[in-house]
Amino acid sequence: MESDEIDRGDAAAQLVALQADRAALADRVMQPWWHDVASGLLLFGFLASSVIETPWVRAVAVLVFALGLCALAWSYQRRTGVWVYPDSKAWLTWVPLALVVLVPAMVLAEDHGQRWAMPVAGAVLGLALAVLSRWWTRRWIAELRGEL
Image (cartoon, rainbow, N blue to C red; front, top):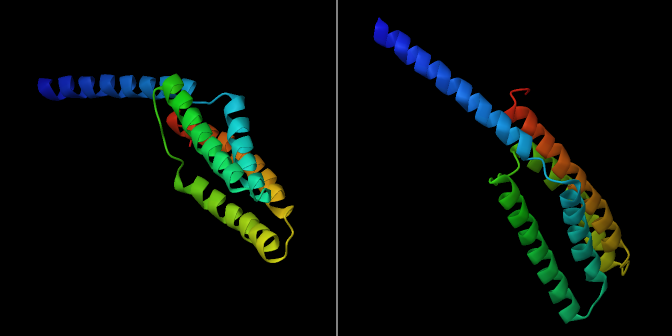
């Protein structure tokens, strides 16, 4: 009987410690506002660069996009100590939205010579990425705090 009470006491203490750790994590995982803005601008720049037909400019755009995303990931992980991937709800929001915006823009740009379509798609998706990033992080924080 005593061992059950000790084990329950230890389990309760461990649960309280785990909840405190989750609350501390929730307090530090929200990225600064500029992180969302920077990711949206990187995506916009990458998609808008397709207007320029010079191969080296496109190569630079790809490089800037990749290095920018790596820098954002590095700064986030260094600041928070964690890295987490968006959940299925975020992906099920982002992927259809990206397809609905990108496919018509690519068709307009490539098949109909409407080169303006890709920068517009970049602006729409850049804004959507910034908003979805903030939304998903707030959902994750609520989950860590046990609010979901």
